[in-house]
Image 1 (spheres, one colour):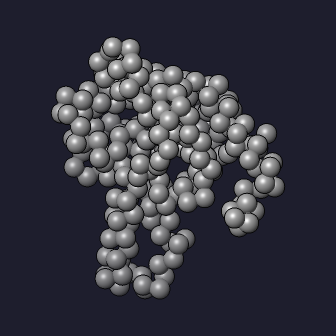
Image 2: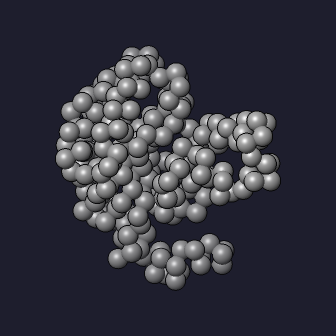
Amino acid sequence: MATPAHVAIIMDGNGRWAKARGLPRLAGHRAGVEALRKTVRAAPELGISYLTVYAFSSENWSRPKTEVSDLMGLLKLFIRRDLAELHQNGVRVRVIGDKEGLQPDIRGLLQEAESLTAGNESLTLVIAFNYGGRDEIVRTARKLADAVARGDMASDAITAESFAASLDTKGIPDPELVIRTSGELRLSNFLLWQAAYSELVFLPCYWPDFSREHLADALRDFAGRERRFGGLAARDVAL
C-alpha cells in the first residue's frame, strides 16, 4: 500500500461528542487529547513520517473565555505529561502558527518541546497552534515584502518555491492526505497553501472516537485512489 509520508488532521467534533453524551465540553476536549495520543503512537507504525494536527486555530480565541482557558490548560497538561514519552519514542515536535502574543508560559512550553525533540527522527509531529492558513500567508507576504524593501531580495525572486520556503512549514513536505472528522466538509482555514494538491478524506465520526482503525481506513482510501488513477499527480493534470 502506498502510504503518504505526511498526513494532516483537522480534529473536529469534541464539543458535539460531549453534548451527545450530556457531558461538559471540557470532557470532549479531554477525550480528544486521548485520541491524539493514540494517533501519534499509531502514525509511525503505519508508515507516516509527518503528522500535522490542527490543535488551536487563530479563530478559536473568539470562543468563551472559560473554554479557551480549558484548552490552554489541556495543552499545558499534554506537553508536561507527554513530552518525555514523545522524546523517548523519537518524536520530533514542530509548532506552526503565530507565536507572537502568546502567554509567556505557553510560548515557553512550545519552545521547550521543539528544542528537546529537535534531533528525533521517527515521526515529526507538527502542532498547528494559534494557526490560520490565511494569517500564515499574510505573515509570509509581509516578511518577503520587508525583505524586498530592505534590498535583501529582488521582487522577481519571489516565486512559489521561495514563498513556500518562507512559510511556517519550511522544511516540511506538503501533506498528501488531509483528514477531517465530524462530518464537516471544509478545510476551515487549515494549510491552505500546503494542501493545494492534497487528497481529502472526511469522516463522520467525532474526533474523540477516532482510532487507529479510522486512520488505517483513510490510508487505504488514499492508496485506492492512487491505484485507480495511476498516480495522484497524473490525476491532477488529467482533471
